[in-house]
Amino acid sequence: MNTDDYSTTHSPRKPSGTELAAVERMIFGKNRLLWIGLTAVMVPLVVLLVLQYRWLVELQRNSTIARRATLENYLGAITNDVDFFYNSTADRVLTLPPNAYAEETIQEAAPFFASRNLVGVRRVFVVTYQPIPTLFFFDEDTQSMVESQEPSPDGQAVWVSSSPWSTLHKTLGEVVATDFEVNGHDPDRRIILGPITDENRFLVAVTGLIVDQDYFVEQVLPGSIEQSLPKFDDPEALWVCVHDGRGRRVFPSKPYSAIEPDRVGRSFDFIFSDWTLSLQGKLAVPEHWAQSNFAINVTLSAALAVVLLGGIAFTVRTAMRELKLSAMKNEFVSNVSHEFRTPLASIRVFGELMRHGRVRDPAKVAEYGLHIETESRRLSQLINNILDFSRIESGQKRYSFEPTDLAELVRNALDTYEVRLRDQGFDLEYSGPSQTLPVLQLDAGAMDRAVANLLDNAIKYSNAGGKISIRLDSSTRDVVLSVSDEGIGIPADEHDRIFDRFHRVSTGLVHDIKGTGLGLSLVKHIIQAHGGYVSLESELGKGSTFSIHLPMGWNPNQTGRGHHG
Image (cartoon, rainbow, N blue to C red; front, side, top):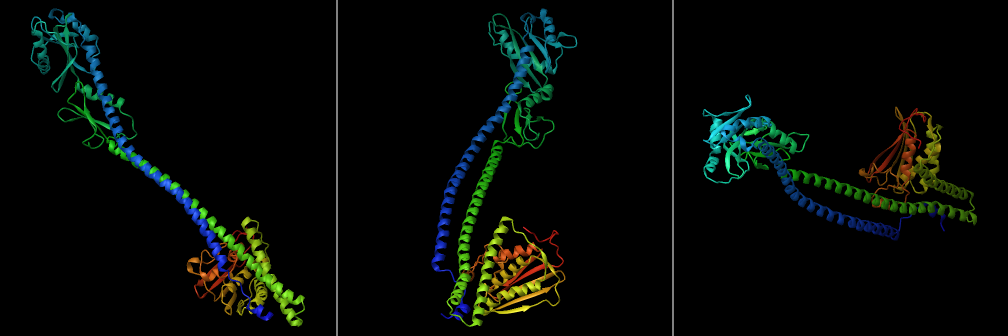
C-alpha cells in the first residue's frame, strides 16, 4: 500500500445512491401519509361548509318571513291598543241609562256624563226622537245638557251621522243591535255612536261622542307606539310613521329620516280606519334584516373556517417541519458518522503502519505522527462542535473570557490545518494586521473553534488545489478576520439561512459533500457571545468570504450585541 498516495488523495466520501434513495423513500412515504390525513380532514370540512352555507340561505329565507310577521305583529299591537282605548272609552261614556233619553228627563244624563272620564273626548251628545228629534250636547262648564239651537259644524256632523238611526226609529217595531258604530264622514269630526233601546231592544235614542283628534295624535298614538315597539339605542333603527286619509303625515311631527315606500304597513281597525301606519328605519325591511344576519352568519362561518384552516395549516406546517427535522436528523447522524469515520480511518491506517514497523524512516514517522495528531484534532473539533451545540440548545453554554492575542490564536489555528491544507493541495495565503492589534477579551477555546469551523468550511466547499485567503486587520471600531475561498459559492437567497442549524445549501454540489450542518451556526453563536457578528459575501461559482467582526474594547460584563447563553 502506498501511504503517500493515501495521505494526499483521501477526500470525503460521497453518499451512495442507495443511501439517498432510502432517505427519499422515507420522506416521500411520510409526506404521502401526511397528505392523505390532510385530505381526510379537508373533505369533511368542505362538505360541512357547503351544507352550512345552504342552511344559512334557507335560514335567511325563513328569517325574512318570520321577521315580516314580527313587524306586522308590532303594528297589530299598536292598532289593538288604540282600538281598546276607544272601545273602552265608548263603553264607559255612552252607556246611558234608558230613563235619560226623553226630553223631559234629558238633564238626568248630565250627572252621568259628568261622572265619566272624558279624556280623549271632545264633545258628548244625545239625540232623542220623542216628541221630535232633538240634539243635546253636554256642557262641561255648566254640567248640563244643552239643546243645539243654531246650526254648527259639530251639529251638522252629528245629524249626518245619526240620520240612519232616525230611519230605524220611524220603523215601528224595528229591533237594532246594541254595538257601537263609527262614522267618519267628516274626517275632522270622527263620531262614535251607541243606540239607547228599551227593554224590547227598540231604538228610542242615540248617544255619541266626538273624538278629540289632537289628543289621539299627541297622547294615544305615541303611548301605544312606545308600549308596543321594542326599544333600540338608535332611534332611527325602527320607528312608526302615520298618515291620515288625505295622505298627510301626522306622526311623527319631526321625521328621523326619509320615508321609504313599500315598508310593512297596515290601517287602523276601528275609528281611524282610513289612516295608515308603516314601519320605517334600518330594521323595517325584513329582507335587509335577514341579509344583515346572513352576512354576519356567513362572516362568522368564514372566520371559523379560516381559524380551522389556520389550525390545519399550522398542524401541517408543524408536521412538515417535524418531517424535515427528522430527515435532517437522519442526515445529520449519517454525516456525523461519516465525519467520524474519516479521521478515525486515517488514524487507524497510520497507526497500523507504525505498529507493524513498516515505516522506519524517522522523518516519515514524524510525518505520520503529525497526520495522526492533525486527524485527532479534527476528531476533537467534531466532538466539541456537537457538545457545544448540545449546550447551546439546552441553554447551558458558558464562556470564559480572558485577555487574548487574536493574531497568535489565528496563527496557531493555521498551524493545525497546515498538514491538511498541504495534503489537499490548497494554496494558503495569510495577510496579518497592518498594525499591532489590541488585546481582546476572548474565550480562546471557543474562538479557536470558530476559526477552525470557517477554515473547515472553506476546505470542504472548495476544489482541491484552490486558494484560501486569511486576512486579519482592524478598523476604527472592530477587529476583522476574513476567510475567503474560491469554492462553489452560496446563492443570494441562501445568505440569511446559511447560519441556521442543520441548514445546508440546496444545490447538488453541496449534497455531494458530507457535513454536520452545525459549523456556521456555532460560529455565529460564538461571535455573538463575544459582542460581534459574522458577515458573508458570496457569489455562486466564484467563492465566499466569511468575516468575523469583533468590537475593540468590548467588556463581557456589559450589555450589547453579544450574549453568553
